[in-house]
Image (cartoon, rainbow, N blue to C red; front, side, top):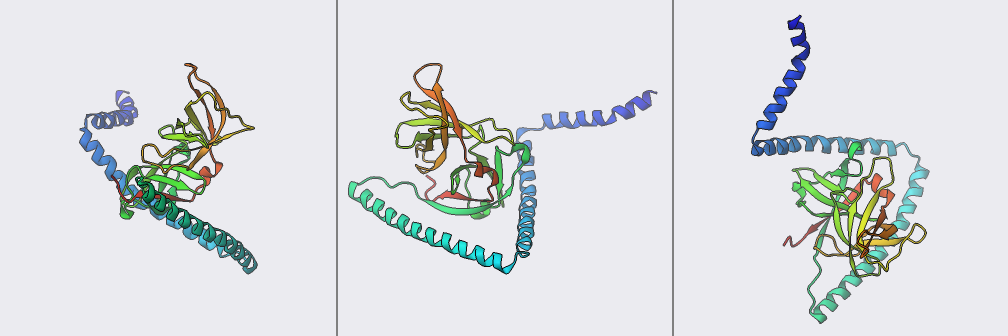
Length: 276
């Protein structure tokens, strides 16, 4: 009878020994094992992402020629619009450089745009982080801003050999200096506690009391450029509710974030040309 009880308890004893051994390991060894496991896992995640892309490619091959011709025409219209916007952007950059030289102002930080494919998104942490398919092999640094056509995605938290982990703007770990559009006074933004299937929300704090926002009259929240991480003017979300804080000096409220954040397949990493 005691032998039978010992056999039943053997898995729990083994688990307890493993947990105790892990707790007694030095921090340096734990860090080495964690980094080693991440580096071992990165090629697997990148390979799985490439396999999904190949599957989508063969799925697209099933479309008829008429569908492809229609899609090509639509892409031609979109490309023409982007080409015109690119010309306008180049003219604006030239004008900004001329004014900076004329007024002897310091130049804004410049970035190299590195497009990256989303390799993995864990459902249990859907609004927390994503993994992109580029890492140290493309010069991605820790802390680099990540953006898309709708504004801010997040920032790089950890870099591996072939992949990088990105903390999303929806995550409570993310804090940004921001401003309300057309108002230069800085406010503080932080990601909210977002469950996987609910609309993404954030929190805005230290809002001046003379600013009002509601679901019917939302205010656009943009990056302020303070801190030198994100360029100014990138969309974070829209403030849909504001109420007075407990001290009565400021307001705090809720920020509605773009639902497209839940279906991203491509993002762009802003790699600083001058890391200092």
